[in-house]
Every structure is written in structure tokens, then in C-alpha cells.
Length: 273
Image (cartoon, rainbow, N blue to C red; front, side, top):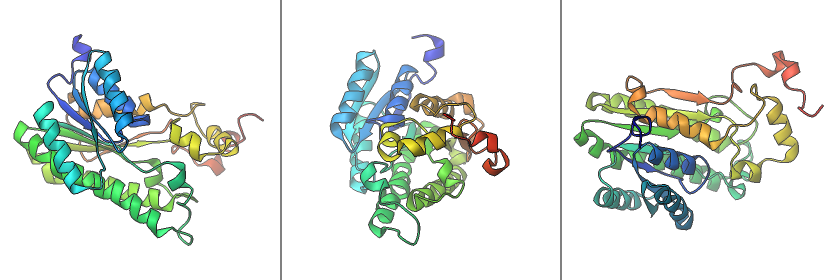
């Protein structure tokens, strides 16, 4: 391991929603840079596969089943991680219910499915609050730590769909600021990363080809993001490279929220035209 890939040596990272997509990419990258990684997911098989990949590449990882909405589940996983890998010093809160079965029911406020609203609140807001509740004490004892929560550009601007997802991600940005304010004096940093349109299995499952074409036309860099793009931002926020950053949300959206579409018609013509 070179100096460049050992920047997280001695750190223990817990990643939620790490069985696929952004969470899996982040777990792999943090391990590549020296962290021992607790790979957690509601799907134990997926978590196990990612942990196996990390170990196969020479890294350190243990998989755990974690329902982030459950307080007892958090208490158990953090205790097990501490016993097997060491006290958690990095938390990447990434889990969110983004599958088609959920997103297809997350529409506008007037047709809001209260069950989906409550599910989104329990995973995105309650889940990340609990993650902070059960990892911050070890960070304080260790003399510091870094929390990185996955927010979204949907939490920063209005859209015609995904009312619950957007509202909860907006609330998550406020949680970032609250935790940063409360625990900065203990050298515990909390930041957010707000992805734009990322090419994950969830995107392919929930976005039609026609809609994907329209979304692609609004990408200043001419492509959707990759999970690895977000993982790189998490690595930065988790490491000492960002040691004077806290309470911030880093937008990684390929410039999508930089411009006003109606003022830039040449950017909103479908890419294939």
C-alpha cells in the first residue's frame, strides 16, 4: 500500500446501503485507501459479496445486515463492528429506499402515499440520526471522526415527482448542520454529498428511456454520474484532505443545478436530435 492509498490507515468506516450502487463503490474505495470497512445493507447477501470483493483485493471488511430504521439494529452492528474491526471513526450514511416499488408510489403531495412518506422518513431521517447517535461517541473518544451523509440535489430544489424523497433529503441537509454544530468541538465533522443523476441499478429501474434521454440532455458534461464519482467525494470528506470542512454539502451533479434550463434551450434539446 502506497502513501497515496494509505490515507485512511487505522480508520474504521461503516457504510450503509453498501450492497450496491454508491454505497458499494464507497466501501471499496475506502478500503483501497486503508480503512477497515463495515459493509452494511438490508440485503445480507449483497453486503457479503461486496465484503468478499474487498477482502479478495487485500482489504479488510466485514458484512452486516442492517435495517437502518431500527435502533436495536444500530446498537448491535456498531458493537459488533467495534469488536471485530475496531471503533467506528468514519460513517457514510447512504441507505435510502430507491427501488422501483417505492419510487413508483412517491409522486406529488396531493397523491402522496402516506406509507411511502413514513418509510422514507424512517430510512433517510431516522436511519441517519440513529447512525450518528451510535457512532459519534466512539469518534469523540477517539479524538475525532468524519460523518458523510448522502443527500441529493432533489433536497435542494423542487421537482414534479418524488415528494417524500425530496423532502427527506432536504431534512438530511439540516441534520448535517445540526450534527456538525453539536460535535465540532470534539473534532467530529459532519458533511453531506449531494449526487445528481447517477447511473445505478435504481436509476435504470425507475427511469424510462424517454425520461433518461431528457435527463441526459441536461448534463453539462454529457454523461450521467457514476457511483465512483460520488465515492471519490466521500473519500475526500472522510479524509484529512477536508479537515477544515464541516456542516457543508458538496454537490456532485456534473453541473446539472448550475444553470437555468429555460434560459439555456440549447442544453435541453434531447441529445439524439
